[in-house]
Image (cartoon, rainbow, N blue to C red):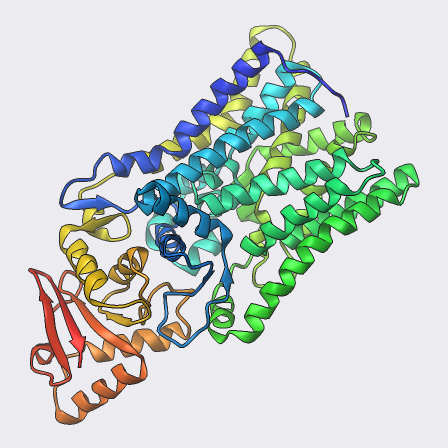
Length: 545
């Protein structure tokens, strides 16, 4: 690998680009945080998968309480605490030690991990790029390049406004919803995804950097890092296994040395051990097994990826040809090239989680696309045509997707306050404070709507009967049971069945949210097995006798 010592001028460019990136990845959070009021307190969620953010907050709350092996709070089914989540534990403990909110600690780690990634990405790029201009171009491509999903949406606006759920995976370009497949979108997400891509890149770098070293010390360190990664984000093991194994075979063919093969095996052994623990969890805990069964993340049709990466695809083809001609002996470039190829195979394996394999894919794709862009740029000449051509190409690869990104992250409407996920109302906070004082960890909650259930679990270590669509086992049945329970049926037989249901489901408190119920069932106030213990304008809490 070409070794270069960065100059002050080089780092000035990285700092400038990194600062813009950091601002963009926090724009959505700032948009919501600055609109918080005494009546509406910001939860820490942003526009991308807001429900998932509150799930993370529920784990951070468990970590704050000193729980390392966590439970799925989105079910009242009996379960053991087996989820080993060191990342959420550390974030929760940081919040406790510093005496700050879970949201503050969450955002702090997002920013710190982003800064570490920005620095490390610059280090890696300076190892593989010969000039400052090519290095800064590659850096900008990784941080800002996107696809043409905005163009598809503008042409098919009615599709974007009408579909939801699984339909969006079939019809919409991947850059609209697959955040882990784009660096900028991924870093607007949770610390988990930021740390995941940082560790993937770090592991790849360490493997290449010490491939010829006689000592295996760094490989053991690398194996430990991969083990930590797979404990937190097991979907990354197939990616690393496919990339590292393919690269090791290439190095064996190129150098006739078995050492890279052995080192790759040591590194992947760490991830395999961590995966065995995850397999143990799934095999021994039905709640977690059902969670995995319902968390279907199929890869969409190929056209969705082609739209989602847009101009990066043809630029990648040009860059790949250039690298194959000029950089075949550069092991880091070849690992990145292999990564950008084998992912396409992983994406269409017959698995129900193959969309997860886009995680980190944008990094090698964008790096190689930057090589293709510079190749075109060098052949455009020095006339005005060159500037126009380069500008149009840059618009198609970077700036156009940024405009859509800004639109999404700066959007706000008054109904967002009451939508759920983004803000906790004063009334809801009153319920949370009451339950924190009057209930105990482990006592189940039956909530009339899932959005309030999300809000409660984000601050309380209390399980809810029906929560996240993926994490609530047998979701459709549970939703039917919720609808049945809150129906206005008050015969003696119906009430007895509801009493038995609460007992069987381990429910200690029933919470009713009139904001999202057409009418509050009349029988709640007269049922002998319920005692009203909290009553505000729109929210009521009943203790199960």
